[in-house]
Image (cartoon, rainbow, N blue to C red):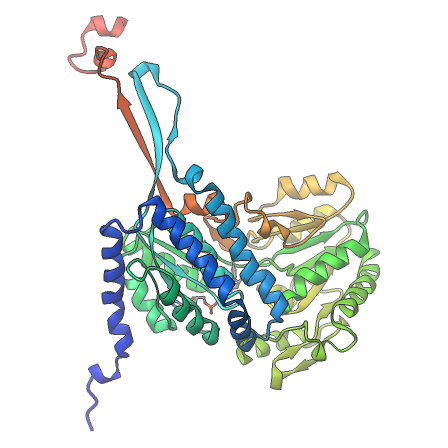
Length: 464
Ligand code: NAD
């Protein structure tokens, strides 16, 4: 029996170049450039979220078992507040910015942010709405045409967003391409004016290589092992509150979740006791039955996380149930840097505690790994805070809190080194999706004073 090659090719994949070419034509026709179009599309995106938030929350629940209110806050409200900020500042952030008159060349200059063109936004499953639509806000604000690729690991959300985007936004310049590795591979083979990718570093490398073929600029929002330092001077109850929230929100499947804790042997038992109090306050004594506690995205990740518990000293939690992909909020004590939990990003509800004798030793632990996406410092003493700020690097830092850096539009959000390149949020999103074009206009009513730079280079000119 012979099987034709054509019959095994997904027809939707062969459509992708045609669909992308349509969107590119929309950009080339100038549809996306007018200020009014950008404003109108951002308002439409806001309406999409307002009108359909319940359906979206249900889809995210079906994919991730994420509590409805948690979705409302982290998925819907997060993007809507980004839209609000961008709309408020749209004129200022996209208009011309004059530079001081340059007397040496008798010229007036300005910087014009212009759209890059047709951009691709590839999103992961863990915040399947927010991490897809937040970058899109910046892309539209900057006047680009956009193709979005949601994660196939959150299929209900992906299908819903594809349907809603087609209904609310201008299909001539904004579209969703659904699918998995094959569809993304096809998308990456095409030429783009920018690729904005959020996800793991292995795929980040694939994206970077594909982009190099076309000299395409990229933003890579990746992950890593975000450390937390709990200083002996810290308020332990406050530290435990922020750590438990940051770690167990979305069942630990948050890129900026505290990955592990560094503290001293004396603080460790007090911190464990305080974490136990917070976990019980959040999820009761049986987190499996709590409506506020989520599940692991799939069996593969559940199995990967379960292995990290083998042979570990479990201080809190540790219960797992594969049939509903449950892993209890878990804290591990006396973890060594060589233990499996310290090999790669955990991305689940397991919090290892490593004890060190002093700040210098904690800094050495942080610096032996890749530069992390974030860092959390709990201390009432300025000295250890300054030591971390001057002797380590990370995408962002929050002091005496966790995750809040994400919600401040004036702070660029992004990684450094292995945790990513480029950043976004607020004005930084507009900058990311724009080219800053330098324009200079020489006054014509004065003789050209710079003539002395033109040949012939006579000795008289040397004296000028
Ligand atoms: P994922 O598996 O959903 O992948 C992300 C995207 O990459 C998806 O759209 C998927 O289709 C695509 N993809 C997957 N394999 C591919 C391949 N071989 N070729 C081309 N495209 C491919 O999500 P994930 O990577 O598991 O997400 C979790 C990771 O993302 C964690 O490391 C986390 O820290 C990181 N993350 C970072 C941020 C951030 O803002 N920096 C936010 C969320 C997640």
